[in-house]
Amino acid sequence: MAAWGQGINVLLASSRTRSSAAQNKVHALENLPSVAGKFCCKIIVPLLQLFDRRKDAQCQEFVKRVIMSHLFKIIMISIVSVNAFFVVLWTDYNTRYNLFTLCEVSELIFVSIYSSEFCMKLYVDPINYWKDGYNLLDIIIIIIIFIPYSLRKFKGKHYPYLNIADGIQSLRILKLITYSRGIRTLITAVGQTAYTVASVIILLFVLMFIFAILGFCLFGVPDRGDPNNWGNLAVAFFTLFSLATVDGWTDLQEQLDNRNLALSRAFTIIFILLASFVFLSMFVGVMIIHTEDSIKKFERELMVERHVTLMEEKQVIVKRQQEEVSRLMQTQKKGDYKSFSELVENFKKTLRHTDPMVLDDFGTSLPFIDVYLSTLDNQDTTICKLQELYCEIAHVLSLMLEDLPQKKQSQSSEKATEQ
Image 1 (cartoon, rainbow, N blue to C red):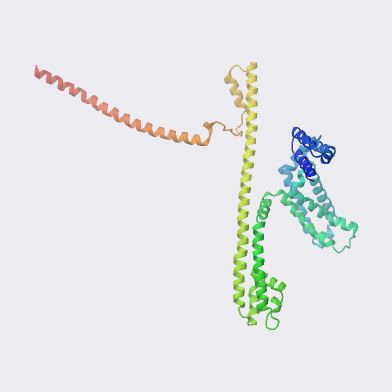
Image 2 (tube, rainbow, N blue to C red):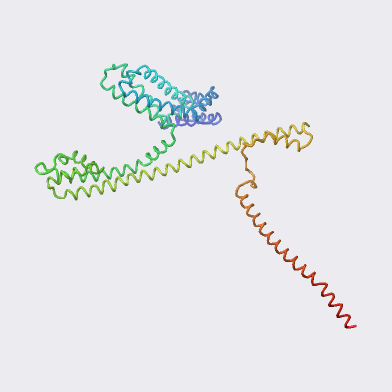
């Protein structure tokens, strides 16, 4: 059995690789044990080659681009919303009678659109389609849509459970989950809290079990107790659930007070404190914590996707500019331009003001520009101080020049007196 499972795993792994990798997987299948190897070589290998070498690769890529496009998602969200509106109209008998033909035609259109969507997604990836839980949800919804038609066909229009099949048609609106990442994030948060929430619910059940037995023994006596609310374990559980949700607990306590039952108020207050203020608050806190974590993860994924999209656009711009420069250089070599300046001027005419700038150079990065501007400010301050110093030096020199003739005259007069 392990060999059969290994062969199936090889098939699934090969369907996601190119032809060279698929050949390696085929050789791996041939090396399996005898019975499994023969089966894989005769059955699985042709299927492997069939999925790996699709002759409609271009059509598959086109359909994939269609179903992954933003416009397709908007159209499907609009269709599901309109279908939900028609379901609301269908609940009114007068409107259903007056618009019977419109409702029937719209129903056929909606079923056709949902079936076409399923076929398109299955055509794009017939193997990995079944691994996505939201795709399985779409399949369940399609099955639910066809249930009323099947019951009317095989059981007749007066089948007693036909109204249930019509009622569950409201689940169609769950198709919005597939096209809403926000809703999927919240569902992921709920799924992550399943283990913790289950532990809290088990603790609450244990608490209710203890208080149910205690309440039955204290207040469930038929003669002087309250058998309507505490007469048996099932009724006691229901009463405790009302106390846990703090819904009508004053009426329940009033009934106990009318029968003068001892310890009734202490019993009610202790249970409400434990069940409502502790366990339910704990439940809400766990949900909030995991929801915040999922929202943060969702925001990080959005940031990564935006970065990837920006890098792709950047590569496209760089490639286009490189091609343009290469074309201009080839034109220059052919002698169509007289000088390099004329070549550059012609290249400037091809640029647009809406073209984003590709900042690959360190000199065009924002941190470098910030440091460079700060350095220029410091240089301006230093130059101002140097200018002030030069002005002071010039002033001192001018004073020295003014004093110089007086010194010469005094020296000449001293020489004359000496002679």
